[in-house]
Image (cartoon, rainbow, N blue to C red):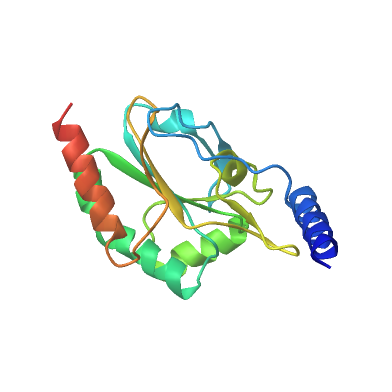
Length: 178
């Protein structure tokens, strides 16, 4: 009986790995940030190179206009002037469409870029693509990218109420040390 269960479990696991594809690891701290080119909520293309020479807060989130994602976006919105004083840009990425991003940004007065990664390619490059079988979503993770284009911090655990302030404090500490 144990062999049959083990065989069944191995078959299920193999099927899951096949459905989800190979797991992609997140880029490690100190590594070059993976490049991307995606449309924003206005349909304009943005690439990693557009943020060269600036701190970039690249945050991935599951879904526009859901409670947790709204809280996170509004926390960044509320601290936007502090980020700008440090020369930092905030960019959110999810698998939602350009139109969905436009409605989300307008509804909540988001003064930063939201990128539509509808195919999930960028989320996969950053190791945050989560496959739920019938749906894919980006995991809630953030990458702080240095002005040189390197991953300076990776936040794989996010506290919605303090995340914006935590990232801001890290930029201040890292920028002060350079």
